[in-house]
Image 1 (cartoon, rainbow, N blue to C red):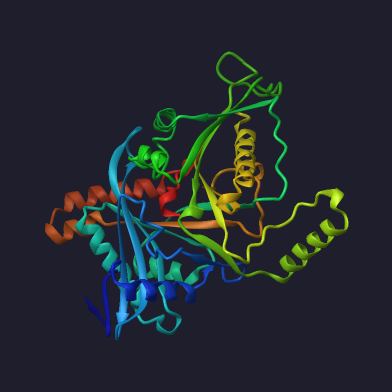
Image 2 (image 1 turned 60 degrees about the horizontal axis):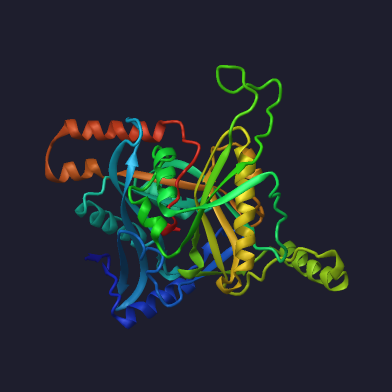
Amino acid sequence: MGFKGFVIRSYEESQLSDKAQVMDLERRCEIGQSKRVFLFTDTLGDPICRIRNSPMYKMLVAERDKEVVGVIQGSIKAVFFTAHKPPPGLVVKVGYILGLRVAPPYRRRGIGSGLVRRLEDWFLSNDVDYCCMATEKDNHASLNLFINNLRYIKFRTGRILVNPVRNHPYNMNSSEINIQELKIEEAEAIYKKHMASTEFFPKDIKNILKNKLSLGTWVANFKQPPRLSSSTTVGGNGQTTASSWAIVSLWNSGEVFKLRLGKAPFPWLIYTKSLKLMDKIFPCFKVVLVPNFFKPFGFYFVYGLHHEGPFSERLVGALCKYVHNMALNNSKDNCKAIVTEIGGDEDDGLKMEIPHWKLLSCYEDFWCIKSLKSKRHNNISNDNDNDNDHSHHILEWTNASPNRTLFVDPREV
């Protein structure tokens, strides 16, 4: 496909020149928030690693004079669409766009929009109903491209919480909270029962849980339920106690790619050096040190986070501390951070319970969505009723009050 002097084609994994050029392009394009922290990825020699575990995936490159100057990745999976039906709702196909990169000298020439449109064509050929993407609030170029030029709609806002793996474990109150690892079948049953109405909940949840990168699923509850305040009742009988529980799963993203901090604010450098000096002078204080993020490091991604009950937020915090301690003990993974994403419309209570560093976290991760169904109908028929019906459905979905949780598939991180 020719586009203003450029050719957009499929990435050829078997071609060493394609692999080398895409990896070089990745190195030239910063990932992160321009005014805060720059993160670079090390794909460990596999440019397609971030989507390889998805059910269907594709990478496209933009080429000029045999030089790769742009790249985009996409994946397809089936999720439950719950805007107008009770759980589990209707199963629809969703295409995910990620990894859009254009070499700095070639930006603002229509290459990015050309790559997106070509990927949307691939989605259409595979009967995808919706396509979506996520980007940070500060990425104005990306938001302008997708919302103003390509007619995507801002759908949800997520919060990405990053907690460094400290050099000391968290103290766990095992006398108050019970944490139990679940079998895959048990985790699948709980997720299908309690999260089927969660936005973007995947139909193939069992495949995610069975994947070698999934490190396990844990559920937490109180050994003795805390007592609610006298002014709070649960249920219709005036009860002042209620059961609370929480569940999380863990994904070893560091096996897929590594991250490296490319630039940090000056206060960060002063802070980290001060901690190291204090630890050297006063080792008895057991100062919590900041990991070295300037060398490639791995990270664990918390997914499938769900909690119920009046005290369940505390249980989420306990589970996050538990997986932190697990990462600290598994030194072979070189895990330096625990990453969790929650819905931005959730209350601040959950955010406060999940250990994280504000400097590394992103509180406004914009999710955008676009319906492809009407475009497909326009291509094959003049069925206005179908068009109107599908437009009504996406309006229902985008205008509906956000669910408490947002399922972030670890295969698209």
